[in-house]
Image 1 (tube, rainbow, N blue to C red):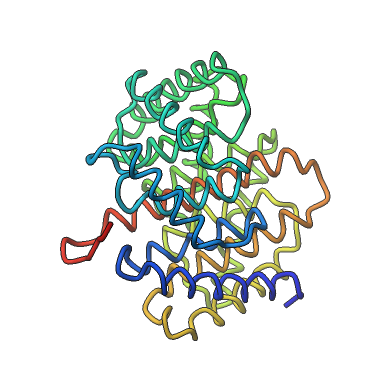
Image 2 (cartoon, one colour; image 1 turned 60 degrees about the horizontal axis):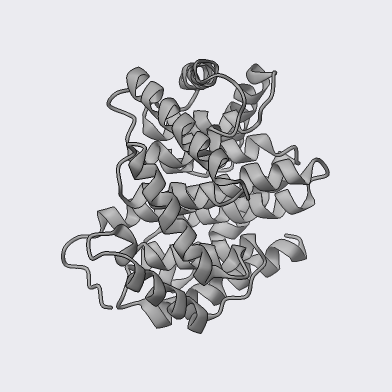
Length: 329
């Protein structure tokens, strides 16, 4: 494994241990596992004191019933700190964007805060933001009409990302349906995560959709050949790997090695599926830095979708936490 990735793995484990030591009684360890990735994506140093400061500020600025008032404020704080020089000011902007989304009819909840973060990724004026929200709502409604039982608030963030395209909503939905249908004919099982993979495929913005489908199938088969057990939660990461023009065999070897390293850690003994996702995202972020193409497209598309995936996965983990879990202020 090359030094860049080796350093990222060591940094990930070091940062996770710091977070675990500070927050083990505040948030379930699984929900903590994805937070260190945020700092690695943006090459930002973890500062526990700053994380505490921003998370407390978010709590002060939100109501008792807001998702940001509880668990979600920690990964959200990490996102804001790692991306912006003025994270405290961005908290206010985040809440403003979230309110704009609910005013347009998108339901308030964990996924609306994730979507607001995605909206903030581009410095657009308020008029553009409003138009983007309205288009995202149209995209979401069309998704819902095609897959009523699959589509939920968890699809808000990708609807926001897809709203950046100038294409008509009907054309965007048609392309999503193409990917969903073609991918379901291969090794991918139908369901919400396949729909999410179909959305991510749209970020490739390519005319050769058939090639992208074949590439996803190829990645799935190569992972399986290496003895890696693919679960539905890994589908979106496979899509991101397909978009990046890189050496698949080398990437998959790295993923297997990193997953093995993480699996051997005492604190990660019972989270092998999530460990694999972390390994995949570490390799993807490293490949993005190395890939020799339009880095602006890569950063605004994939990095934002990686962040949305991390946040969405965190939201799913948080939702699964039972009433016996402990939360303190």
